[in-house]
Structures are given as structure tokens and as C-alpha cells.
Amino acid sequence: MLPASPAKTHATQSLSPAVRVDDIPRGIMAMIGATLCFALSSAFSKYQVALHPVGQVMFLRSLTSLVVCAVFVLPFTGLAVFRTNRVKAHVVRGFVQSVSQTFSVLALSMLPLAGVISINFTVPIWAALISIIWLKERPGLGRWAFLVIGFIGVVIVTHPGTNALKPGAIFALANAIMYGSVTVAVRGMTKTESANSLLMWQVLMVAAFHSLLLPFGFDRLTVSDATMLICSGIANALAQYLWTKALRLGPATAVSPFYYLTLVWALIIGFFAWGDVPSLALMLGSCIVVISGLLLLWHEARNNKVRSARAVGP
Image (cartoon, rainbow, N blue to C red):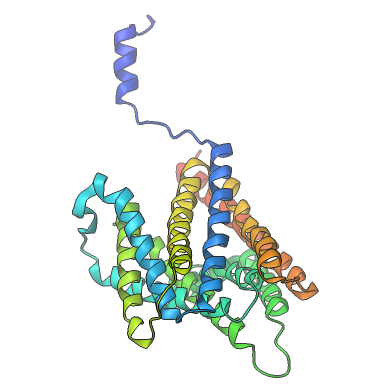
């Protein structure tokens, strides 16, 4: 059998689908950058919400994120990025996220930075539980075990006593649960909506809903306060971009574990900015939550690999 000619070989290669090549080191670096930006954005918001009304803080942060995303996305997509048949789904998602983010900032005003971020790490746990209830997924013994481990960590972090949970912990848990529901909803929306469409609708709707909080209070800002709030929005937008880029550069199993570095940055910032010293309960509970999240990630990745192998067949 004669070998194919160079021209024929080149033509065949040009018609074959492009093969995605992972760049795991760059993906890890992007995820580390995202964690630092997430921690900085939360720290800026925590500092400002102690000085100004929460609605003002949320709106200015959201408006800045909207402007930053528009500058980087709209020149390439135009207004066509907003073309969709699922306007209602985008509006509902934006409303839930706006409330979720407001709860997060309220929690930051009442709890140490590291404590709020530790509770936010339970988002994958709530997303898995909501998937079981909402999407009727069959969890299996492994997923249930990791969910139980995660909830034990939550109990230790929030350390409820004989009385009710502290208000800050309630707000942080509400944020994690609502964000977990958004994660499940977005999973379904990705079948019809592009990443740019999801991003632009999100920042637009969140800014719109946060503007409704302005009548409840708006103070005059100093130059330094306005700068800090703008930096918070920029850091939040950059964090979202780097997080998305990290998942594009490498598989989730390789880059997602580095997301938990957010807690390290939070502990460092909290110590130097507010003198926060983490308690034993916070450190122990955080470790349990992180371990359960990593185990859940490994479990889901393994199951996906098994399902893909069965779909391909022998």
C-alpha cells in the first residue's frame, strides 16, 4: 500500500477536528491568580461595608464589573451577545445571584474574612445536594458519604451553640446555598447559551438588581473609598475571567483544587488588615470542608470517566 501524498495528508489533517491541548501549568497559575483576586475583592467589600450602606457597596462593585466585562467582551461580540430565547432564565439567575452576593457581603460585615470564605467553600456540596433533589440525579453511596463529611465541616466552622446560629453565619450559609442552586441552573443553561452570553447577562442583571438597593442609603464617597470600591469590582471581574480561563487551559481535576488557596489569602489579609487570628474550630472545619470538596471532585471526575468509557464502548 502506497503512502498518502503530502498534499493529501495535509488536506486530511486540515479537515480533521482540532484537538484540544491542555496547558496545565498555565491553568494552575490562572486559578491561583483568580483566588487572589477573589480574596482581594471580598476584603475590599468587607472594609467598605463597615463605612457605607450595603446597597451602595454592592451596586458600585457590580457596576464596575459590568463595565470591565463590557469593555473586554462587547468589542468582539457586539450586542448580539444578549440575543437569547431564555430571557426569563437569565433574569431569575441574575436575581438569585444579586441576593446571594448581598448575603455574602452582609456576612463579611459580621464575620472574619476567612470564616466567610470557608463557608463559601460548601457551594459544591450544596450544588451536589440540589442536583439530587432538583435534577433527580442518582448520587450513590460515595457522593452521600462526601456530602455528610462536608456538612460535618460546616457544623464545626459555624459552631452553633445551644442558641441559634450567628447572623453572619446564616447569611454566609444562605449565600452558599443560593450560589449552589445557581451552579446547577447554569449547568443546564450551557446547553443553549455561550460563555460570553452567560457572563454578560449575569453582570447586567446583577448590577440592575443591586441598583434597587440605592434608595435605602447612599453616602458621599471619598476618593480613597471610591477607588477601593472600583478596585473591588475590577478584582471580581478579573477573578471570574481567570477562573474561566483556568478551566479552559486544564481539566477541572488539575486546576480546581488550587481554588482552595483563596482561604490562604483570606487568612493572610485578615490577619494584617483586621488582626484576625483563626480559631481551632475554623481551621479544623475548613480542612474538613476542603477535603470533602476535593473528594467530591475526584468522585465526580472518576464517574464521568467511567460513563464516557461506557458510551464509547469496546
